[in-house]
Figure (cartoon, rainbow, N blue to C red):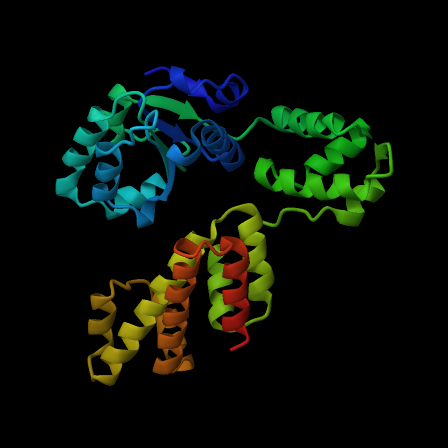
Length: 332
């Protein structure tokens, strides 16, 4: 299939020109979000926003097997396509591909992938035969610079080339992060005509490439810096559900480790059962199991499950509620 650049698609958006199934591939999250917003604006209540690690094949089948009398087709945006595939059993892959081939206009499915390059393995190989491919790569440094300049000038403000270059270097080519910081900057200079380096230094926070594994370590050690790192991760590279899943996975490992150790199982046998192989991983799990009581681990898991219920059932703000959970757990 012919690839469509997401920038051009957003600029000349027409849902009727898109394939029934579309794979959106690339790392530029802001543009993917803008595409999702365009779809919401067109489809309204007929759009389904789903998360891959929370969505089953049966759920997709139910959506596309039913349609309202007053509906002009169902549209599904499936974020974290890799998370969906990870939970898809091997014997269900053919069934999934069969479903995709049966989706016809006006129904549409958008599979949001974080892959930088198109994989040659299945099911991508088969999907490429019939789906539309929308690419969302990071902008080139020149394109990124022009995007920032355009946003500032469209707001009615001026900025010289030196200040513009200084500003762009703070964002490490991340449009999503740049958008948030530039909006703060524009509010700060609301009464001024031109943005200066002093204005930038006053309010813009440079993007810091934090490791999620650094956060996990500080979180379980109840280090207050974990909160700051967590917020930075949310503002730059990660979604709350992704980090919550990592925390839950680690908590479950620690609980099983602690339980089996109390039952007298040999250490190496426990590591093998948990598929923990590297010395660093072994040391981390053993250390955390010694730091936390069983009741503390169970309470952290219960609170995490309750958090996800609040987010996914009662629509509590995902970002605010996840930060509240981290603060509560770090403070003990």
